[in-house]
Amino acid sequence: MNLDQVRALAAIVETGSFELAARRLHLTPSAVSQRVKALETSTGQVVVRRGSPCTLTEAGAVLVRFARQVELLEAESHELLGVTRASPAVLSVAVNADSLDTWLHPVLEAAVAWDDTRLSLTIHDEDHSLSLLRNGDVVAAITSETDTVPGCRQVPLGAIRYVPVVSPELAGRFTVGGAVDWVNLPVLRYDTRDDLQERYLAARGLSSALSPTTVPSAPGLRAAALAGLGWILVPESSVAGELADRRLVALSDETVDVALYWHAWKVPSPRLRRLTEAVARAAAAGLRPAPALGHPVLSAPSQPVPRAARGM
Image 1 (cartoon, helix red, strand yellow):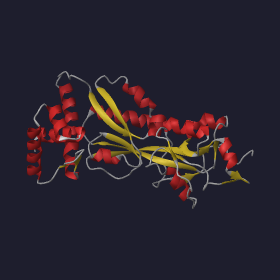
Image 2 (cartoon, rainbow, N blue to C red):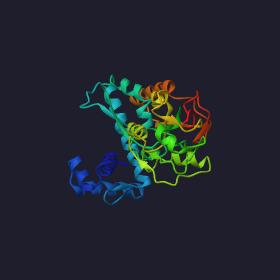
Image 3 (cartoon, rainbow, N blue to C red):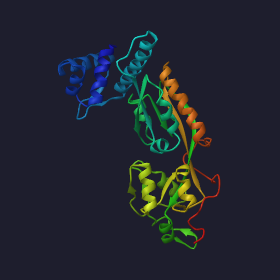
Image 4 (cartoon, one colour):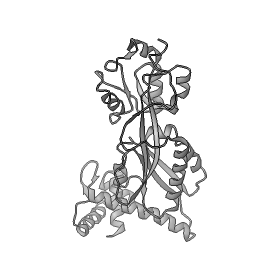
């Protein structure tokens, strides 16, 4: 297998087309096509689906992940040999919005001192981020998925505790005799893949009769809840102040613990090891101990939180 051929494949997927890949690599589109054909001949498999944009096959994803691992190791070898790099190495990482909004801040602070490395963070739902790792789009991912990815290691991080919150005004309208009208209470969500609220209701044998309001931002969801647009499960740590002064109230004493895991390439990279250690330290300080396998997990809160039904 020729590394230049694999790099051509990676450029096609990154840019979306043979033509744009050719511009990036300073080649002709014909030369890029020949490299891909040679790669498919040597592997005996189709590696890219021609389209708009071009996408990887399963075999192509394996090859692209290999190419990017080689690029990372090249950066490490240059440093060991005393060769000056033109620019810092980039570590692409998939993170979920709630982690980035809460416990992951110390990692960003640590990265300030990494002159040889730049982070490129991609926001992705924690239930679906392993696909980016399999395709070689990222070197590591924070996810709730426990599946193993070939060539990667998995490290348990801990759990985020979620509490169902709503504005006091909305709670008053949909709480009768101490019982919450979950079916008709407006609901919020992060995006179409965010089904945490749906699963929370399903655990109660319920489902919402309303289409959710979508707000693709962790701070935006809190703002929407404060405005009274609907209820939402949010990290307990992110709304401690709002719960204390009752700008938000908890709809139930039942919470959801979502276990998180760190999946990263299993390569001898000091940069990736340093990042893994920083994530582990931040998780130890900012996450709860992981619950037993199973997701979501209904549990009693760590301490009493204001309930919508109290004081009404």
